[in-house]
Length: 124
Image (cartoon, rainbow, N blue to C red; front, side):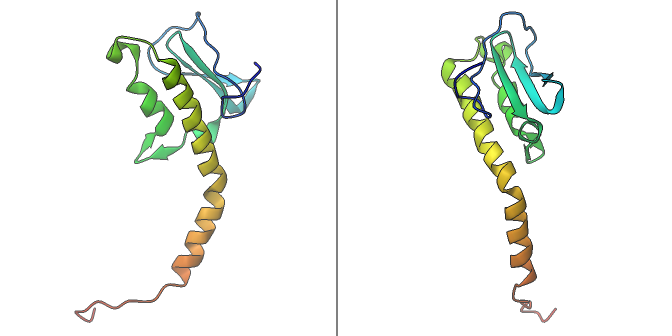
């Protein structure tokens, strides 16, 4: 694929040979670190890094949860081009968070190690 809309600079591919109403994962290029994510028979996002796909907030995989609420069986239609682009944008934002995570964790450890030991008003 050429172009640049996906999390790794790739554009979504529209397929006609995929069926199913929930995201289906396929390994990309023989590497377990990159995934192809298919939804319905319309959209495929290629080469999504596994940590981006597995990123959770509140115990839910962000991209998987978003897609699950936009299935054809719920909406009565396929994804719109804007929704396809949104998944791509979401994957890019999550990739940025994944890349920043070590620095954020380190910053959190430094800050919590140097906090003031506030005492409770009741003396405990």
